[in-house]
Picture 1 (tube, rainbow, N blue to C red):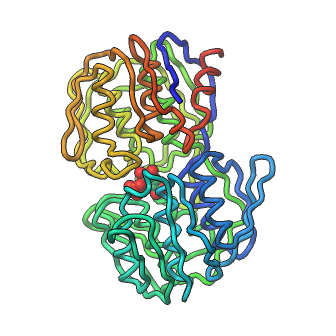
Picture 2 (picture 1 turned 135 degrees about the horizontal axis):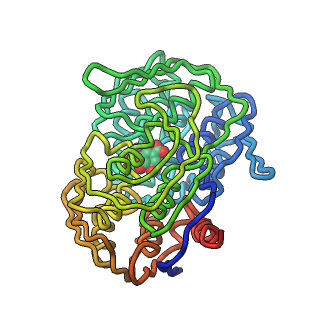
Picture 3 (picture 1 turned 120 degrees about the vertical axis):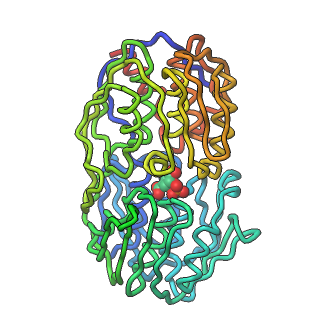
Length: 435
Ligand code: S3P
């Protein structure tokens, strides 16, 4: 499906962005592991997070949906049942990398996971390694890719230093760590800590602390059961980021985004934008904070001029999914915008260094790829044209925002990719333009 996004809209008013994808996945998985029913309000209704509800159903959890709420009656920590057919994770990398942490301690049971063509190109050796150290086995295609089978076993605790900054890998090890005396994950650069917060809320022993070298350590201990009555999922900052960029770039725009999750380990994009001189008002969480809850606020965005900036490796995990937008903003900023230390972008739903550079260049941008990022020459404007999403939701939304801010508009080829995280984007823009 192709969709056109044209300039000239007057974007004004209030909108609640879709619910957080990362937190929705975690709520469904933790709900499935829990012994008492969990009520999830504002669960994301999109393709990725429907895959997670289907996946937990397949292993024995009961899932009911009523008026935008999801009720999960879990199977308990150690009672997941292997289905006859492979568990289909669809396009959801987070589901594919988190759920094996739980399945790894279903002793004597084997679970096969598979997904769409894009998921079959995404590596799982990064979780196979630590799970093997803990005593489980993960057999992957060519040792690296889905489909793969997790064979559950009795696990022992490890201290695992993350070789790549990845919240998905960290979360997988921590979920598996719930069946060990003590498991610690060390990260040189902090990544999103939604799993730690939710597990703490569900009664697990969780310790999250800064380390001497500027990194972070997360430790979990054995949990016989998890219990969390209600989770309210905040608005997704990564989806809101597309509206924020539209608010900054479209002349005359003034938007209020309601109920956005501003956990500091997710809010790197807002700090990058502040540095670029964008006008954003909201009560952000203090860097370094940790609690069992997720902070939420309204964000007030106004159009205005922006300056170039440099984003280095230490900021990358805090803004990983928003880096394509930094490239787009760089096109409009004064000066040269550089992103480095972001090689992980190459193993997302598409190779996001290649697809962002090719996509924006096709719209008239001055942008060069680096091995681990990109360099963008600010021209204060973008011509427009056509962009291919390569089936990647963030590319679809990037193209849409580029169109709203461009001179000639953008045709997005493959807009249906946005279904996995933000199905209602075009409607939200239409509502803001009509306000
Ligand atoms: C996610 C972590 C990030 C991010 C992804 C969601 C999560 O992936 O890109 O969209 O929910 O934990 P990595 O952990 O692989 O960096």
